[in-house]
Amino acid sequence: MSATASAAAPTREEIVEWVTQSTNEVFQTMLGMEAKFGKTFIEDPGKGLSMGVIGIIGLVGDWTGTAVVSCSSPLACKIANTLFMQEYPNVTDEVLDAVAEMTNMIIGNLKNSLESKLGTMGLSIPAVVFGRNFATRRSGKESWYVIQFEVDGERIDVQLCIAPNQNGMLTGAGVPRIMTLA
Amino acid sequence: MAMNVLIVDDSAAIRKILQRVLRQTEMPIGNIHEAGDGVEALAMLQQQTVGLILSDINMPNMDGLEMLGKIKSMDAYKTVPVIMITTEGNQNKVMEAVSLGAAGYVRKPFTTEQIKEKLTGLV
Picture 1 (tube, rainbow over the protein chains, first blue to last red):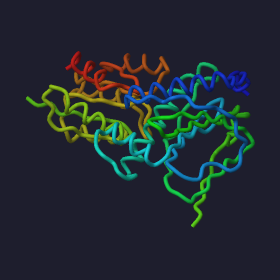
Picture 2: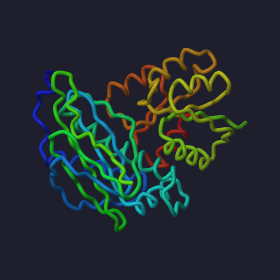
Picture 3: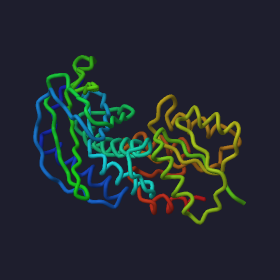
């Protein structure tokens, strides 16, 4: 195991501070919107999100994990309206692109903070899931940090699961599985 | 004379935002071409002439640094400014971009003004 894989995990306070900083910066700079911190808690693996728009991105390095940014469809449309300066009454491919990029920027900036403690990391290409009546399940055994914000009266959650990358093998920390319920 | 621009980013959202920002500047912008990675960008440069390139660093297939090195080895593009626009906070990568000949660096998230300011100073 490398030195950074055996490094102490960031504290819960550090993670919450870094996620809050990154989320605030991205919303303020790109959208001119305030992301008000709501609450934070830790969730066990198992049942995950089941509706809305969900951006998912993987982190890989001496530590590995998954980050998820999720919001309601109306907030996703508001984000795209502001980002692209045009009206999106419904979720379209462009709205999903907007959420993917917001996820990429929030987690990209979070990654810069995590690297100060955990060594160099890479990010996967973001994936976005949208719909209703689906189920996600978080595999692995690691817990998830959930940090909730309020933007323009709507909730947005940032979730992070991270663990040491044991002996160069991915632990599959948190990887969410998505199943549709037809 | 209007200047053609190439935007290189694997994010369709960022390409769309940068298109809008470029059109809002007072610069004489001609055609704006888009590529999703370094490979596509190099292929495009074989067919099009551009006077400015805005590029991400972290992209699939060929990243922005490798692409930048190849562009700067092309006689036709040695002096064309390439501005890197990225979430990458790793200073080694930023320094590598500068040493490879990047004309500037803007960190994501960015404001429209930051992009305009960077362009005004360079072009």
